[in-house]
Length: 373
Image (cartoon, rainbow, N blue to C red):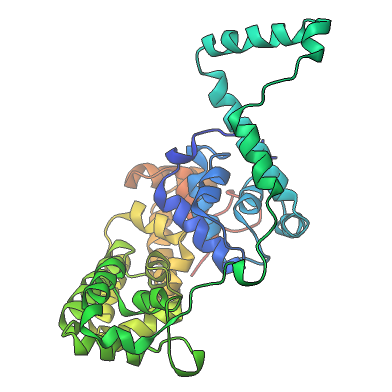
């Protein structure tokens, strides 16, 4: 059972681990801030990060937020965590973790401040004299300002604040808007990000949100399309390289859904470049000579499924592990230990992979020869 207190500071949580959990929660239907992700992961130690990745690569069966996911990683059934998520249990947990973390930070500060606060408290505990009780108390400036704000009536009618009216999307094609549009392209890096940004300020006829065609027409008007396409190519391909060809992770990093990313790739004419990049990482995963790397990849089933090579990868790795175990003259756990020493990997990692690939018999765990192909 997880102890709801920090085992490390939130800023010490690796960004890749927090991103993986954020993607898992988003897919389960529960969005949470980056701060909440790190706060939840601070309740786990560094040794548990591989469990976070394993959960993130699986498919969620219930809406789970970050604290619910940590609860599942610590052993709670997903069904129980889902019920706790729906009833608001983890909101109380988050407040508790933050309060304990703040208390720990305060306890590390010098005690001089505590002594300074102790003197006024002792004075306050002393009984007041008759003259002190009848003397009017001077109010602080902050108290007077707070009382004044409370006394003001809420604005009504023509004094109420209304949202500023949206401007016509045609204004983006005017010469004065060139700098604004160029800055948005540079800030967001792709046309869909800019389209979302201008939706709160501009509108088309009939109050509709601006369309992608209208945005690109304004870009053509100012001659900004070539620069935008170069920037899009750089951003999209760098995200795919960063996440080793995984479309889902690349879309998350760009703040897009998978469908929006596919639309962007197609509209920007990058389909062939993206497919070549994904094919490079497919070949790399299937032909890697490092067994440790391949065993680690086995736990990232969602990544392999994203690349479309999960079955092919498992079949190839199963053949390699089966041959490795059959070379040993021992049986069961001894065979796994000998094979692990021969290739320089941990016996636990090799045994877990053999079990997942169905190579070792389920009867009498670790006490039978490898199953025949």
